[in-house]
Image (cartoon, rainbow, N blue to C red; front, side, top):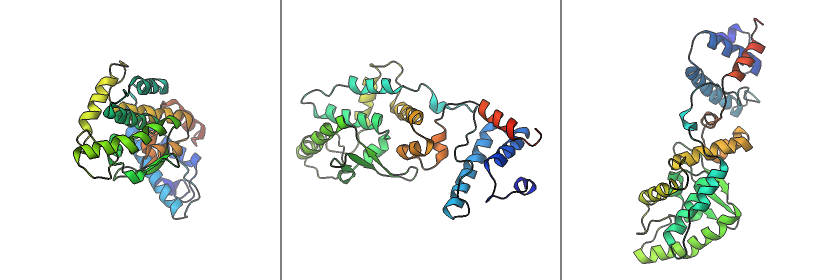
Length: 263
């Protein structure tokens, strides 16, 4: 086993020793994609060792394998483009559904919610007094508390106090689900498709709602560290967040050259 031959253990291995290990893997001809998988699993393992107090740190917490094509990063929209989409979508006076759609679009752009998370929002998750929303976790994502922007308050308050009760009353419905369609039901798929189709007329680079979330996460990484972005995005594993980093192989090659024992 490499770790024993190098004279270290999983409890004591440090960053420099791990870079030497990466050099060994790289010379063996293993693909970068496979190496990235190894590193992802080891990050989870080191996190476990931390939780069980076998280690005080994760030596490879911020390590990424560069140079692997990332389809998730295609056609990323800048923050200014995302904001332009938000302000271009007009919530006309008296149109309850467009006002609802504008709120949803804001949650996609400013809080980075996924459509599934929006569907699962309930009344108890909305706390306007504290200016935040509780996003429920799922089998594949973590829950989190997200802060609202100041300009979102009044729109959400109007929806909560006026628009939503009108929809419920009109359809004789009673539910704790926050967002409803015009018939008082929970399915918003058709409504969001119409929103997405309209957004395409505002920006020719816009593709779909998934592109919005990818763009939001990439822009978060420009302003925040990995851990904070992981929390904001609701990623269960740090490796999920790392996929949104825009970089190349050059940095890894330089580290291997610096720390390899043959140097």
